[in-house]
Each structure stands twice: as structure tokens, then as C-alpha cells.
Figure 1 (cartoon, helix red, strand yellow):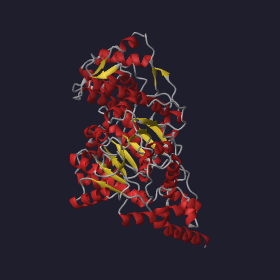
Figure 2: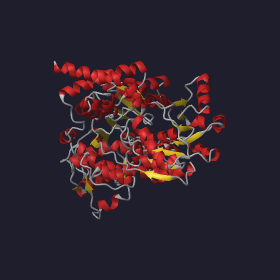
Figure 3: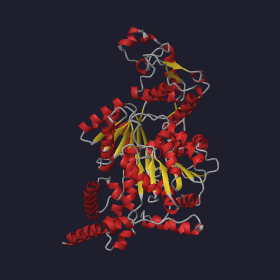
Figure 4: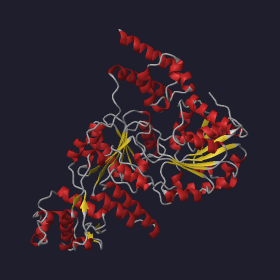
Length: 619
């Protein structure tokens, strides 16, 4: 079903009613959410916009619907060609005329798409920024009627960001070549500085900014003390998300491979994704993750941007990200369907040391390194927070909120303890060993361990030897990690990662400053306190059986169509079908996520499946 275009001369109320009609009949949703309606009206009227909306908040509809109402084709700048096929498949399944242009296509295929654009036979065209800014592409587009330009993942323009893409800076050419075509820049992640950079570099000075809440209330944030990170990850997956899709982020390619091997040995379906893999292997692994149920993708940050898979139930970090933006961006890939999901991270002292070293050893100038350090400090504050994680996360993006009651801190509140004496013991020991030894040695001295190195250096004769016997090594690592996070201590870049004191340590040692510490909690104890389920309430047995049959039917359709199962129908839609058990096409059409095109393609099959299930259940 194609929704015919409406000229710009139409009155705004007609635009509004048309937008709602498209939302309901094409995309199958009963009403707009949040600021969607205002954004769509603004863009449809021909104005520029900057849209910040969390992942899963419905950003795509904000440019897809205006492109279908306005004359011409909407050109969508998408940074990942590997996902364009799925984006276009999803639109075509809903009845929208869509296509893409990228390097995977033959010359004849490219020519066919270009001709379709010139003949005004498409509503949406997805294209990579590298191709868009070429003289040939720009000259061709000048011959076409363009309804709008949508610049997705617009934070890629920021040179301070972890997803920076140089070709995005060149997109300012759109303002120069197409001054009368509305442009909308969209992203899920941008602090004030990044927003200013997007506006400046893309020449969006007159654009209206729509900033939605950054809150993802369906995501539970959990951070655990890193001890045996892979075992902790395995425990987390088995107890909370067994058989469900998830993403695990690691800092290095080697760690990705080792983690995949470990999970596979434990009978968990895991696949690797990093820049060191052959392109064909990466593409195949990504396709499997998108198309199959229950796959765990273990990846570096090379994976994830633009991933539309709605049923990712968890995102886990085995290494600390580089910034709050990176953390928010990566964790936001969980729970796009609005159903409960978990953001889990194992965080330890080595993460802090490693991230600071990477900043200090980078080729960036002093200004860039200072900004990176500020971003890292904000993330450290989040990890060490004694108050609600969601409050701290939203504060970073300039938004206030009340405690969520759904993060690890809210569910098992830590009580800040006066840790001045413990911190003084630690700092004194670092000083007494000459600021020449790493964490393991310092903790051995504190705990009174007669190790070979302690005896070799006569550190058993120091006044601080054994003054920390009452705490375990894990407890002292927690104190040390907080000392590094508070910048009382830093690890030198020598081969021993020698711990050294900073100027901030002086008033602590002199007793002029009190220190409050987050108490250490054993990982097994923490898991028990957070045993509340993060999943949706279980369906009754009969509805669950119907849900499984619907999933089996969807899998068969997806296999025949060679597309991800969620493009056919999302889990939330199948769940609603299983609960409501529609008997007529009209009943089915009123289920969220269905839409007219899907109804015409699969409505009869679904109704027959539901009817047959009801009859078999009555026997």
C-alpha cells in the first residue's frame, strides 16, 4: 500500500491528519509518542530540525512520515551500509516505497535506483555519507525532487565523540547545494557540547531543537565489582537472560575472541564482531544476530550503531567504556521494544588505569585529551555513585529526575562509610614503598603477606606492613579503585604500573579531608539482592503456547523472505495477538505494529493459526 504524496500547499491540519493516517494504516501504531507529532509537523512544513530522542523512542518516524507526505524523495544519510538492506526491507514490508544506494550494488542496480528517484517513484532513499558528498551524486540529486534530508546518527559529526566520522563534516554541503530543502539531524546521544558542534558543522543555526527525555525507564542499570569477569558474565546471562539476545562489549579484539570461546564452551550461542575479522565474516555474524533468536554478539565498539533489533534483552560491558555518551549509546541498544532489559557492567581498577593511560598516550592535542579526561571522570562518578544511577546518568545530559527504584543502587542501597582511615592506610603504604610498585604488591604489604617480592625489598619491615589485615584483597582493591577515581592516586606508565600519589592525597594523609567510600559488596551477595526479575510477566500457559507457534510461523516467513524476523512482526505484536486472539481482520488491524500492508500479506495466515489453536485447545 502506497500513501500518495501531498503538496506543500496543503494546510497544516491536513498534514496532521495525514500523518496520523500514515502512522495507523502503514506503521500500525494508534497514536504518536512524546514529541513525534510536533517534529513531524515542523519538518513537513519545510523547516530544519535537530532531534535528540533515545534509542527506541521512534526517531525514524520523525523523517519517514514527512517524506511520505511531502513531494519528492526523502534522502536518509545512514552511516552503516550493512544495515541499509534491513531498513529498506522493514519499510517495504510496511508498504513504503524505499531503496538504498551503497557499494554492495552492481552498476545496473545503482542505475535502476537512480532512475526511480528521477521518476519520483520512491518515498525514501538510504545512502552512505561517503557517496552522498561526491560531485557525481550531488549533481544527480540536483536533477531530482528532494522532499527532505535526514542525517541519522548526527553525533558522528563530533570530533570529540567515540563515533566520529570525518565524512560527516562534509555534509554541510547539503545546506549550500539544496538551501530550500528541509534538513533534520537525528541522534540518541549528544550532550550540550556535541549539540553545538552538530549545529555548527551541519549549518543548522536556524533549526529548531527537539530534545526528548534521555530516560530509558525499561532499562535496569547494574554495575558489579570485577573479580572473574567472564564467570560473572556467565552467571548474569544464565540467571537473568538465558536464551535471549544480547550484546557484550569488550575493549580489545583478543578479549572478544576469548569471551566468545568461553561462552561457546558453556553452550551459549555467541558470535564475535571486531574490525580484525574479514568483512564477509562480520557481515555474516551481524546477519545471524539480526535474523536469529537468542544470539549473544561479543564485540568491540565497532558494532552496534544503527542496530534496529528490538528484542536485545541485555547489553553487558566487560570493560569500562570511554565516556558517558559511549555508555549511553551502547546500553541504549537494549530494549528498543520498550520491554524490560538490563545494562550490566563489570568494573574494576584496571579499567580506570587503562582508560587513563589510553588518553595520556593518545596523539590528540591537549584540549582534546582534557575533554576526554572530563568525560571519563563523569563515567567514573557514575560507576562509583552512592545514589540512583539513572539520576546520575540523566544529570549528565542536563535532565533532572527522581530515584528510579529500578537500578542496583536503588534496589540495594549502599550506605556511604567514613573511609578516611582506610584511605590513609592505603596512601601511606604507597608512599612507604617508594611509589615504585603496583597494586598487587601494595595490597600484599597492607595485608601483611610475606610474598617473595615483599621479603626481597624488606617491605615486611615497614611500619605499614600488615595494618590492613582485617580486609580481603578484594576489599582493598575496591578502596584503591576509589582512590584512583578520586585522583588521590595514579598508575605510572612504566612496566610495573607503579602507584603514585597526587597533590590531592596530601590533605587526606594530613587528616584535613574526610573520605567517604562505597562499601565493598561480594558479587554473589549482590546478585541475590537483585534477584527481582527484569523480564516481562510470564504469559499464561495457553497464551505462551500460542506465542511459540506464532514465533515458529514468523521464523518460517522470515526464512523464506530472507529478512530478520522482527521485520515481519515484533515480539510485542505477537504477544498482543497471543493475548487478544483476534478473530477478524479488523481485530487484527487494531493490534499495535500490524498495519494494512502486513494485514494484507499475512492476516489470513495469522487468523487461521489463532483459530486452529483455539479449536485444538478446546478438544
